[in-house]
Length: 210
Image 1: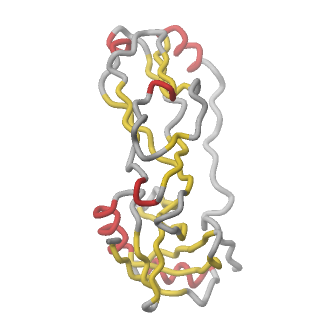
Image 2 (image 1 turned 135 degrees about the vertical axis):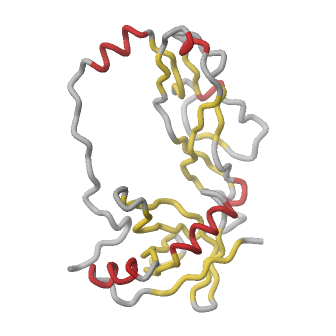
């Protein structure tokens, strides 16, 4: 049974209305999907926090909009890093019996032997694309790097997901983690540092007029 989260439909889409929603402790959101019409809503910030603690980052949520319920998963969110708060959420409408493709966080566990010897751990992929039914989406994919030595790489083929209820949509040769020699790390750090980018549109999948 899905955890229920109350939502209210948004009629006013101007930026001034979005600020008012946030000032009242709520978060603007959008519901989208291949079989549903996109719908702007807002939810309680406190209720979303409680719901995510219950179902996790990839769990199925029953969004209740004026008595009409829709199963969704949270696909994207935008944050105000200065205030440390979520300012917008994207919900994907799902059918529990149909497979979908989502990104799942990759968590490296253990302390690599190569790091103890002075090597530097690199993680090219912080998320992996997986396909499964909504109720089988893993909260995260854990990868043990304890045995990695300097110069070693760990690829998708090395992840022990065979026998699980999801499929990883990457080439088996894609590198998930590697241990660089200290010299290689120095060369990387000596390169030109680029400025941090900022998203052009903070509001996710919707564009709002002034």
